[in-house]
Image 1 (tube, one colour):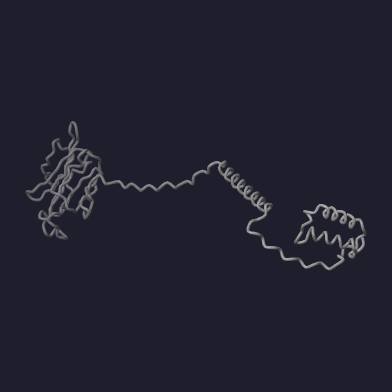
Image 2: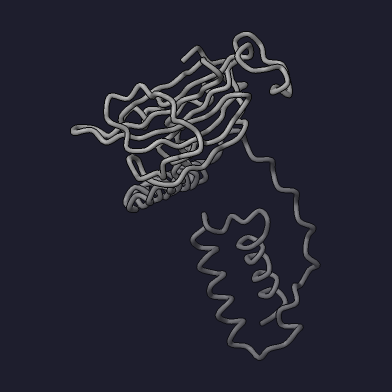
Length: 257
């Protein structure tokens, strides 16, 4: 390949691959470029063979793009937008086809512990105070050994008494209990006595479970030497015989029994 042919090949290459390529609009120049490229590949390889006859021209600056892109670029952008919209539509369809995820389990609220209310209203007075407890053995109507050292007081029982028992002296008063066996219901009694003053109550088993088997003392009923602390006018010391087998002694603002 002579120098003129090489120069022609270089010029056609610039029209095909240079910054201002325009060979795609010239069919004859494009056919000539293909012909010369085939001729160059058939010749022995040599650096000189492909050296351009003249030094390459400096690349011309690319013209600024116009505000309105050419038709080919607008078509390319339109293709991209259509493709992006299709991709979004496919993604949405895939997400909608997925089975719904199981809902996140929500921990059940911890139930508030239920506090059983006492069957007997010891705390009707929020300032009530349990002074002490007197334990007794035996179930309701059970046998209690008769006392013999002290004459038993008269109980307001509606059934014949089967037994009586003295439990000691408290605040200057004797404390007694008794039990009777009736044809329909058994009966329990509680009594306090000081000299000629007696206070007593007898109830059946239901009454005892409801907490009505009780007697009480006001501050004025108690000798001053028996009180460690003075009592207010509305306070009472209550002797409460429960169906638990115990007699609870409670200080509080109770009404008169």
